[in-house]
Picture 1 (cartoon, rainbow, N blue to C red):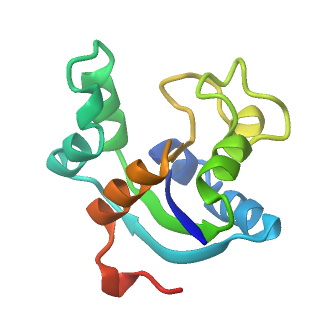
Picture 2: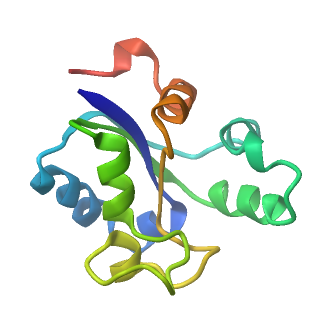
Length: 138
């Protein structure tokens, strides 16, 4: 069993897409092991995106992710990291295939609906930012 962090970004929450996106993961057979609606502080956002700190898009990324509530969740199942990333589609919505979350709902790189961990190691690090062990249910 593998777990990954998924964030439904402020644009997804604002557009009332949370239930639709969560149901896609459930219909695929994944479990939701933890779930919460949160407003990220700049400190939490900085910790989450620390690998992008010196990139030109970093300030806009922090501004966007802290602009409204996000749904943070732990999605669990076989090969969760790789399958969830395929379900999300390309980071650039213009390249995301129809049928993927970004292909169906995202319009720009800045507002691309969803985040998913890119590796098992990243998933462990990111999950710990948002959830305590007691908040995660198997």
